[in-house]
Each structure stands twice: as C-alpha cells, then as structure tokens.
Amino acid sequence: MQISSRFTIALHIFACVDTFKDEYKVTSDFLAASINTNPVVIRKILSQLKNAGLINVARGTGGITLTRPLADITFFDVYQAIEPVENGDLFHFHEAPNPNCPVGRNIHGLLDGKLKAIQSAMESEMKKYTIADIHTGMQELLALED
Image (tube, rainbow, N blue to C red; front, top):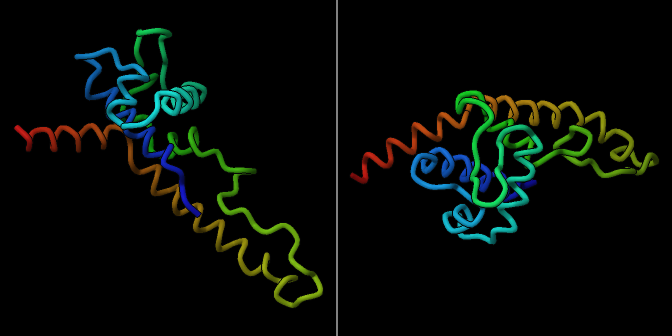
C-alpha cells in the first residue's frame, strides 16, 4: 500500500497558497514551478480540492483561495479529496479466497477487523494535523533562513 504523491503535492499546494497569497497570484503554473511538475497534474489536483470544497479557483490568472481557515482543514480532509478509497476501505481484499482451503475460508475473519483498526488509526492521526500546522512550520523554517 502506498499513498500517491498527489497527497503531498496537495499539501505543498496549500503551503504555497498560504505563503504567497499576499505577494503573487498563485496559479497552476506558479505551483508547478514550485513543485517541479507538470501544470496538468496541478490542475487535476486543484480540481479535486475544489470539488471537495477546500479551495476556490478563479479562472485564468485569478488565483486560488481557501474556503475555510487553515486550522479547519485537516490532512484527513485533503486525503479524502485526493485519495478517495473504494467503498470506504483503505485495504482492497482479494476477491475470492478459496472456501475449500482452511486459510481461504477464514482469512477475512482473521484480517477484516485488524485492517479496519489500522485504517481507523491512520485516519485518526491525519485528523490531528491541519494546514495551520504547515503554516506554523513554514514560518519557523523561513525565520531560520533569515
């Protein structure tokens, strides 16, 4: 299992929007330069964030704004917007274990609860961190550079 780089790119987007909002129009081209990726990738992620109600995007060179305060956007909110999980399950279980095998017929009973607990723990941790934490950390790092 691996969460795609789209999640960290989305967090990078939030950091850029917050850091540069008063100095520049933050556009997909601007973000692509900071992230060092194709603007098409950025536009897809921006679309997902917009559809989730986390940002507003003005067409053309209008830039990006957040729809709520930094402290009200959790990593979990971003994760849900960028990495939607099928049927709400993080782990995709193989479809048809052999019911004639003692392991095959019992594997779901053995693992289902454990995998749900792992997913729940990860989601709980993601809910503890917000875009405000990125803001605070970025301010501290930038102060060290001065």
